[in-house]
Image (cartoon, rainbow, N blue to C red; front, side, top):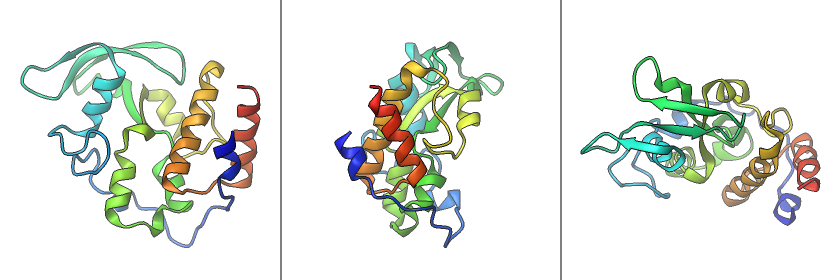
Length: 183
């Protein structure tokens, strides 16, 4: 709650258009955050962290299969790696890249943006549909459908935005404060 109170309030800075490419190659291992430079891509790092009953493809970093207790929906989802099945479990940026861009990240250097995009504290394995529904929205316009996870979600948003010095909109700060008041 104290960290949430200290978050700077700014509107979306529309001075520069968001470009996903400004955050570097997706799931890069060339980062200076947890799991960086370990020889594995970030997606598989997060899958290995978040899946239960994990099976890793022998001799690789690839999560082959496992079970996800989706924090956003509360559902249990079976993950099986493959072209027609991998999308059932996706990796969400809790603070979306576009939200970060418009609330401070456009001023960062390339390495800091690449680190942010691959920082495991900002990444969760989640249900593909929930990830699609959340998209680029912030806590003012989207909260997890599973109300039991909202406190943890908002706390993570505050942690990430505090760590990276990102701002919140006035509406987002009110939504965060409202959720935290019930935690």
